[in-house]
Amino acid sequence: MIRKLGFGLAAFLLLGSVSVMAQDAVPTEPEVTIRQEGDRTVEEYRVNGFLYAIKVTPKSGAPYYLVAVDEDGNYVRSDQPNGMRIPSWKIFEW
Image 1 (cartoon, rainbow, N blue to C red):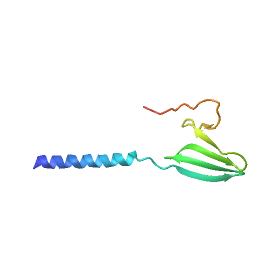
Image 2: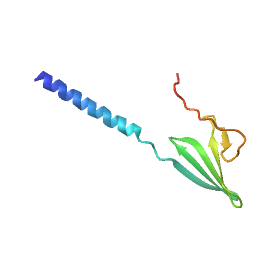
Image 3: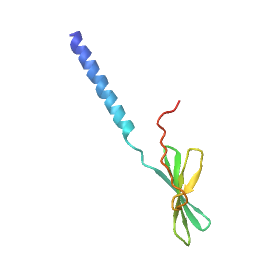
Image 4: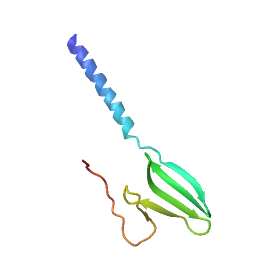
């Protein structure tokens, strides 16, 4: 009887942890904020509150993107060929 109760409890905990992990693995949709600044339209793209890209569409001219280089608020135009953006992922932090 105790063995069956132990297996039932273990199965319940295992299924509960799998469902929690599945909820965490789902990527969130980016939040897009669109605003008008003078003669241009600015679209801000955020995920979990982090601003990672800005699309600027001038009234005359081609739109361009500003992409976050780091978490300190530094942005680079993604269409300029002067330099290459090297991917930088945070593997471990303490």
